Length: 224
Length: 409
Image (cartoon, rainbow over all chains, first blue to last red):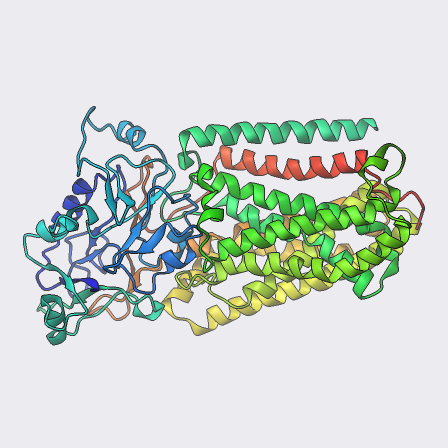
C-alpha cells in the first residue's frame, strides 16, 4: 500500500475551499496554513497573469518517498507511516525547525507561540474552537491535537484522524469541483493510477529527487 | 586578581545572567519573541552556532603547529589555544538551546537519535571536541598543578614528561574532532538540496578555512591581552599572523569560487541568489570580504603586532567580518523560495509560491515570499550573553588556573 493523491488542475477552479476545509478540520492556528492555493505567474490570486494561461495550483505536503524532512529530523519525530504518509509525532518533536529548511515545498509550519495566545492576538472570538475535537494517535503516535503545544512543527497528515475512521481527507471531501483523489499508487487498477496514465501526470520540483506521492494532472491549454 | 580582571569578570558574568533571563522569558512566551517566521526559520542563533564553531579552531591550529609541524615557539600559547577552543565550542552548543522550540525534550536525541541527521552528528562531534579540549588542557596544565591546586592532579612519577608524552599522543586525536566540528557543521547546511545557496561541496573546506583564520585570531587576541606585545612574543605572533592571512585568502578564494559558479550558470534560481547576495546585501557582502582580508593583512605587519591597540583593532575587524559572513548564511537561503516554477505559457517567468508566516506580523500579508529579517532584542541579548559566557570562562580560567606561562619565551 502506498497512499497517494492526484489533483486534476483542469477541474480546479481556485476557490480555496480545500484550504479552508483543511484549516478548519485540522484546527490550524491563525496565520498557519498547511494547504495553499495560488495562481502561478500572478501576484493576485484568481487574476490571470499578464500573459500565459490562468490556472490554479494547490500545494500542501507532498508526502515524499525520499523525504528530506524525515532524513534531517534529529529525533525521528517525522516518520513514514506504514501506508506511505509522512507524519509528525507531536510528542517527540523538539522544535529545531531543521525540517522547515530541508523541505523544498515550504509546507511545514511552526508554533511560534501558544495557539490560545495566537487566537487572542488575531482577535478571534473568545471560546471559539474549531476542528476535529480530540487528540488522535496513529500506530500509537500522537499525530493530531486540537490545541498544539508551542514550539513544535506541524503539517498536512492527509487527515490521519479521518482516514483511520475510513473517511477521506477534508480537502478531498470539501472540493466542489471534485478535483482531488486519494488512493493506492501500488495498485495499477486503482482510480489514482488509472487517472495518471492517460494524462501526463507531473510532480513538483522533480529535480530535487524527493519523489512526491502527490501528482498533478496538467490543465488543458485554453484560449486567453 | 587585578582590578581589570575583576571588572571583566563582573561585566561578562552579568551579561551572561541577563541572557539567561532573556532565554527564560523566551521559554515562557515561545519563539514569537524572535523575528523569525515560517519562511525564514533560522536566524541569529544558528548563525551564532557557525560563528562560535569557527572561533573554536584555535586549539586545532596551535596543537597541530606545535606537535605535528614542530613550531616550538608557539608552545607557551598552547594552553590559551585549548582554553579558547573549549570556551567557544561550549558557547556553540549553548547558542543552539534558545533556537530549540521544546528544549525540555532534548533527551529524545539520546533515546531516539536519527543517525541520518547531520544535526545528530554535529551534537556528537561538538561534545567530543569539548571533551577533547578540556582533556588536552588538563594534560598541558598537569605539571603546574601544585600547591593550592595539587588536589586536581593525578599521581604520576614525572608530570612534566607525562604531560609532554600525552600531549603529543593526544594531538592527532584532537585534530580529527577539530576538523570534524567545522565539516559536520557545514554539512547541516550543505546537505540541503532544497536551498541552492547552501547546496555546495565547497562549504566544508570553506568552513575549515574560515575557522583557521578566525580561531587563530581569537588566540592571538587572547595572547596579546594576556602577555602584551613585547619583543619576546613577536616571533610567535608573526607565525600566527601568517597562518591567519593564508587561511583568510583561501576562504575568500573558496567563497568567490562558489559565487562565480552560481553566477555563471545563470539560471533563474542563481539570479535570485545573486540579487540577494550582491544586491540586497551588497554592502554586507563587501564588508564580509574586505574586513577579514584587510584585518588579516594588518595582522602580518610588525607595526600592528607590536602595538596592542592596533592589534586589537585589526583582530576585531577580522572577527566582525567573519561574524557578518556567518549572518549572511541565511538571507540568500530563505529569501529564495525553493518552490518556484515556470508557469505554463510563461517561459520567461519565474514564480515563487508564498509561505504562510505562522505568526501575526502587523502590516504584512500572511503569505510571504520576501522577508527582511533583522534579529529581535531578545535574540541579540541572548547572542551577546553567550559571547560574554565565553569571555567569562576564559577570564575565570586565567585567574584561577596556571594558564599563562610564567617563563618568558
